[in-house]
Image (cartoon, rainbow, N blue to C red):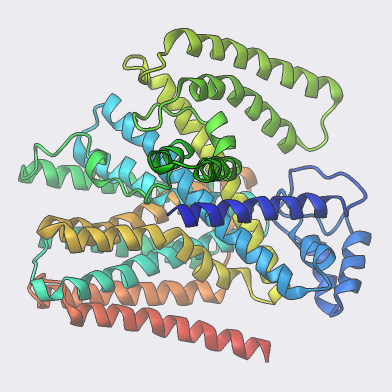
Length: 541
């Protein structure tokens, strides 16, 4: 674990230094607000020489606008143009770090706030499970989808990532679970399985209709997203009628929230080394690890309020209350593009004043020994808001990086969305659901299999639904034109095929997941991958 922390943070520091160096290659400042599209950069596809591409990027700064906060094309072609393997290695390493940051932010801050909100709001366990739990687990997919639709031109990346993630979870994760528990002959609840799977098929059928029409308005988008409310009501009604699990542990998130294995925070690293630190070498090593961990954790710790018991710190709580308004003001200015000096100064002054007031309140109303027990809602709401903003920023950079990699490698961003982005966002589901099924007994298998369908339902309806609502609202009164790429229809077809296989086989196997079901699901998914690989090779020939 310490090695992983060391590797990630060393990588972060190295990349940060290289990115700062690359930033000085440009001759003009850029706004942080960039549309996710590079139509004016199509000319670089016809150039093969790295130096020529670098010159092209420098002379077409207005058209070759970077898609995120970082100009990845200039880093690859200008900063590391003489050594392409180094450029690929840097981009791959940065991709891994962005996946880590997105998942870590969701598990440590976003899920923690949701867990607290479920307790403060006293939500029924069933409602908490299909709303807050799904929101916590599906946060990366949701943010990636919203970010891609918020830009212009790569809404298909968000659509492909959600469908690719749903296909991966419902086929690969469910298939591995079925193979892993096949020898135990554990039966799952028939009505819950059929309810979830049939509703998922209904959702995909609705999405297919939208894709065939090719456009959607605000009301249609809202109707599509509101299907999730119908699903929540259906789950609650089934739970209420059966009354089988009326006294689940409250809040349910304490037992079921899928959390990544926590990386040791700086204090844990220091404490873990200190008992054996009989020499100065170990003491220096502990502080060295502490300093390395700072770049990844410190910015989020200073701007995201965190009142969880295990990570409570009054100095960080006061700092987050003070700095988060100023951080929001900075983001507001950066997203506005060209801003006058008066508006800039006014925004920063207001952010600073609000931060000072909140900091004083936090200082006077909190204790050093433990997080506050009363008036938790403002803290949790603040943590929720800031974790959403951080996740949105990281997801935006992740989508921008994938699009840049697609431009560099000649791979369609759509294919990267189906594969790399979907795999990265679904890796937590794979680890958590399989572990739960293997070690959680019969209930664990039930929860894991249900999660393979309830999670994708949430990601599709909320992730795509909210994205479509925002996109159609921005284009109102004209309808929003939905991407109609052939690979999207192919993925949707394979996904529906996997669901129909499960719907056909599991009742025949007496609702007992086994190798037959699992191997069939894996075969469908890998057939899809082979098909996409064949198409990519054919296009590149």
